[in-house]
Image (cartoon, helix red, strand yellow):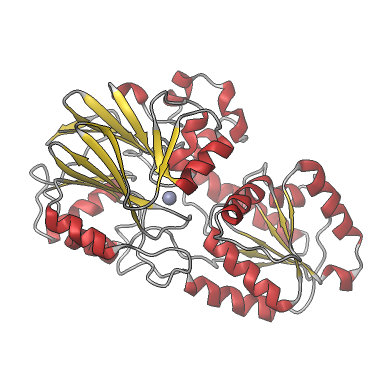
Length: 431
Ligand SMILES: [Zn+2]
């Protein structure tokens, strides 16, 4: 069996791993690295104007040429760094995922042969490969740990996950993972993004309490919150608590409109009849114009959920502070950031600029209403103990992150280059 790192093994983003047996390959994930692209061009829809080779050289999409004879494209979940490159290079092979992830693919990158399964259903790719999805908690609905049953043993791909035992929209299927572990796991390919963080990652209910305290505390002005558009559990929680304040919730932004729409379609989100959603440029402009004209009291009756938590210049909140809409912040307006800044230089810079401009225009800022969607060290140890794999390949991280995983694996009795393998993009390991 050969495991190939096609992307995501030198920095966080553009994930793709190949598993090859008898000269046939299954590719898992097909993501973009957004921060790398933003350095060249801020607009994601502009990706298509670039040549595939240039995007590979820019380290925005995986290095497809490192994989040969791909028979199927498996997608673990709907985050851009796992699915986003489907918009650039459409594989001609079946694209296999859960139903929810397939719907994101169809809505965003409509070409492609999507095949979707429920959890615990099998998809037979060839005599050498069968794919199965196991439910796990993360920060987008219907995430999965991918199980590849192969003629040379079981491969488990856990990228991305966390263990949130109080999630309101998902559960981790520990029993199934235990069963797979008992039956024998040949290789575990596992994300390493936060393995250096000690302890475990707190659950989403921590965010609920933080948000509740803030929304109950703010007693005047317009309240605006921003979070990741794909984080439906958080959006659900925000909308639920806002409903209790009696404010009229308004959802603004193309990507928020798209993802809340898909979540409603799947019955994971149920926006109140009071809620209004604006996704197109013209509708957004009109709505913000109306709010801008309101007097102080009317204005405080509204709550806006907008895109722009990372300060991305083309999203709604940065465009509001940049006066691209007929909208002015007023003293006593509040902005709640329900998202951490993704720790890459361009996001840190964009977010710094956004916060500085918000403050200079009189807005109050509430930050860090967030918990990570990625497993910490003890969560990783738990997964390792559930599965007891023969081999481990850390992925989704830079050398420091992957190195931290090697440290954890060593604590559990594994040995580098014997049964823990470090590979970089473009390279393979035979096990
Ligand atoms: Zn993810």
